[in-house]
Amino acid sequence: MHLISYDIHSDYLRTKIAKTLIQYGLHRIQYSVFMGTLRDSTVSRLRKVLHNYTQDRHWIADDTVMILPLHQYSEDHISFLGKEIQKWSEIQGNLHTLVL
Amino acid sequence: MHLISYDIHSDYLRTKIAKTLIQYGLHRIQYSVFMGTLRDSTVSRLRKVLHNYTQDRHWIADDTVMILPLHQYSEDHISFLGKEIQKWSEIQGNLHTLVL
Image 1 (spheres, rainbow over the protein chains, first blue to last red):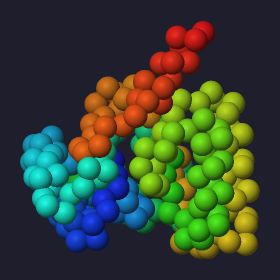
Image 2: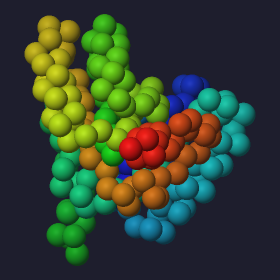
Image 3: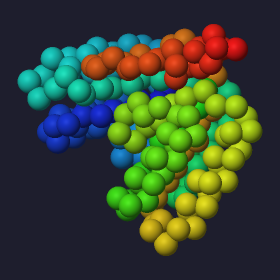
Image 4: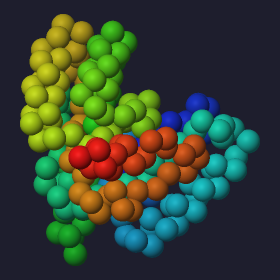
């Protein structure tokens, strides 16, 4: 499971990166935080795509993308205050396991 | 180590919660993402304070705060694109260990 979050100043680039993250199978947990269960090969490809965005003319020096691989421990101990997260088992990749 | 991120609509409440998180020893990694190494007792107290904020009249149904305990695995495998994170060893609690 991975968590990816960003601070991107350009609306154009932020929208583009959000779309990419969702396209690669991540779910939007909060406005700038995405989580999901991806294959290692998908993460590698995604890293390359994200790295390309840092070369975009809309990317500024203050922009950051954080890629955080999560351990089972985090999945077991995560908690939310406020709105419940939809599709939590899908985000954890359980659905995928069931399908297999 | 903990990661706390939020989606809070009210500027007033968001500012208040950000100040609280920093007061409790977390570092602002991104606009809505905070990380740091806290004692278990501090995390418990912080949870109560955050829970109180959900009762504030500025809190709306869509607001969320995510509390994610991180495993050493995440610290070892975290990566950033773009701006380097300042005070990373302080965030990881290494400084604290050195002081002790």
